[in-house]
Image 1: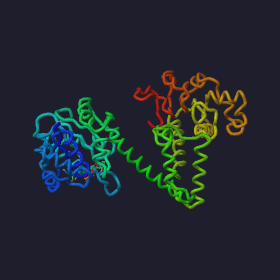
Image 2: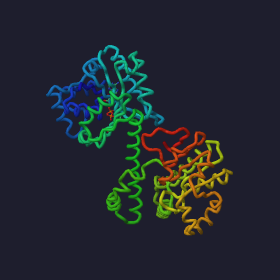
Image 3: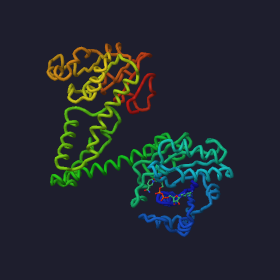
Image 4: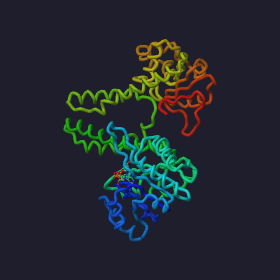
Length: 438
Ligand SMILES: NC(=O)c1ccc[n+]([C@@H]2O[C@H](COP(=O)([O-])OP(=O)(O)OC[C@H]3O[C@@H](n4cnc5c(N)ncnc54)[C@H](O)[C@@H]3O)[C@@H](O)[C@H]2O)c1
């Protein structure tokens, strides 16, 4: 393909050289003549392992060149990859000034250009930046609407400085945010050579993925450091702890526990988080991230209560009482806190949980139920049907198989608040459906 790469900084230099290595015809563009001259003379504008050789090879083979002239770059390319800086503004917000300015110049150049053109920002940008800021700027400057000879798609960049070339060719994933199938397919073809895992999604999702990744990486760093500080206070080798920790690829280093849903609860997580926090306090070790766990969890309980209150309905049916399906354990179940709040505010409730019902009948959990949730006796119903018949708002609070079918059984006048995502991925939202965090 014929590719122009705008911005010859860390991301742009690597992208230019690596794309030329893949056999594409690449023209790099920057406002800094020095960077352009360096590329033209076969040298890398940045220090990065393996990049110098690749730039030299690309230039020698005639597949890589550079210019400061936007119009020339536009004429010689079908795809424009934008690798412009998106620094923090004074107030910490994201500044799109530079990338917007480039779009303005590109729009002007588009006026003069024939053929179709695909603009592909790779700069890190918050959701909405492409569609609400860059696309209108290109449209304004070119006088042409998207679809009229041009389109925009977003491909976040995940490379790390120092291992950028390696990261480029062996990316764990390439994420393509596309508006049209045609642009998605074109970019899939281009990025298939960089990763075995190409995901095509919408533009906003692609923009968001990048921030979720970086927030996660930052969270991992500070989590590891807090663990380290706690370990040190106990004369325990933190590196040995994290080595062992990482061996669990089912629960620790995995997608498990990362699906947005309801608050955690049960007999272990709340108790154990409290205990380690108390120990940190005693040891005078500051652990701001670990200390934020309980408030964050409480917030999700408050969010669920608020979602129910916002419906303005008073007849509520709750499906699922234990903190997860397949158990009758109600200790620190977060839905019990929702229940308590609603009972206190005079809501008319009916609830169902098969496992709690069985345990009540056989008496296993009776003592706990009578002591901790005495009001349950009056509102716990033996069948899902009874709860559905009663409810103006149905709240699904755990993933018991019997509750998944509720999606198909709603009356037209009923609302469904899904705390645990019974809605399958990609399925249409039924009328009246409210997801807690999706
Ligand atoms: N550096 C990284 O490791 C990395 C990794 C992933 C994503 N990103 C993101 O990629 C984007 C670029 O980052 P970077 O580190 O390469 O930035 P950088 O500052 O190194 O490079 C930006 C380049 O854009 C050029 N430029 C500015 N205005 C221009 C204009 N009007 N026309 C042409 N060129 C112009 C600058 O001269 C500079 O060479 C940022 O959004 C960043 O967040 C960076």
